[in-house]
Image 1: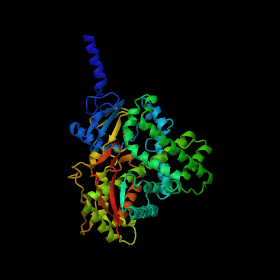
Image 2: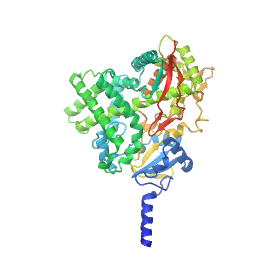
Image 3: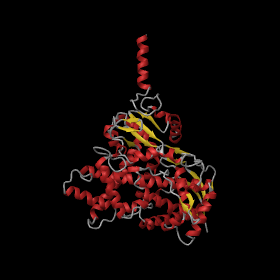
Image 4: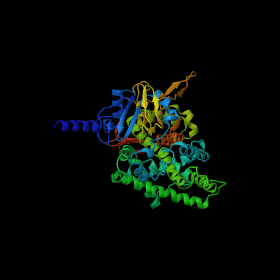
Length: 507
């Protein structure tokens, strides 16, 4: 009897108590099999992190299956580790207990491919190549102004037609996805997605569904890494995401083959042409160490394109959705922004990126939307490549590190009364009495450090041009059930719940 009790006690301790290494940050001692102590985050990631920070401090520890996770919540530490090579890695899938699930889900090779999830030379080469060529085609430059404005015009035209046909009642869900996607797709492929074509319409629908489910897959994937592949494949959401990936990657490969037939090596038209040229070079020179060579070259191509649309499309679309929510909850702030637009731009043309320096209140408004919208509460996970000291704590190799952006963006130390929507916190008056925009170091909406979002420049341009045009051209009336600023779903991303609103065109 005593042996049975002892056995059960040992078993209970093994399965339900955390086994922390010396020097590990504080955190809950109780865990649940497979889920680990991450169960203490609860159903709302943002609220869960805030509660655990209050109890354990600015740096705390959780487990998820076999993964050891550390959450960093204060700005000073985040700025420090963001610059350190030791914290610039991503989770190394090859060392996950059941790594084959990632290969099955997203077609990866010897490690994770692309930009967002890759490490080492692959990450450096793919990121450097992609940013260099995107800049050649106008990415993040004022020359992209016309390209984005073309999509803004399409959006305004479509909205005016909808208003004329159904008295202006809109359902806001994936409302901005197509417009934002096309801004990037034009410099990637040289063309727009034609929504009148049935095949491209289906591709867009799938992309929208995939982006919508992206936030929910992060923790599920980490749980799946702790399951045998045969079991993980039966998780319904992952099976659905696998289908999305397969069809999207096939589309990217088809575009590659089309470009391959018409590409002029001396005059690349777009990013896919640049990939064709670089992959051909790697093959001709037998550059086996290049991330563009052979099978790895194919996997890096499809995954890099996919990463671009995650970084430069989905988050911007969601931020624009949040903007409409804030418009209806704080009409006075947006009326002030409209007065500034009318004064600086007028009504005879659309706002241009060249107007931006003369619109300090609108710039402050965007900053406050980004701060409170808080689309990516913890960004993309980082990983410790080798054991490292962080203040008084010792982090072991492969520890996952979450940059808790949400805690900085809502910290009263940096933003007094953070629950209040107050664009004025980003404004100041210069010695001449002129109102100017005041940047804030704690506005780390796009992450920080070596892994800062590569789509930051494009996203800020898109947000300015789309939102300024919307405020200039439309009024909004809430319909029943319009969400408040905290009515959202929270996983890896923070999304406002879908809602209806009446949109009225300004004359």
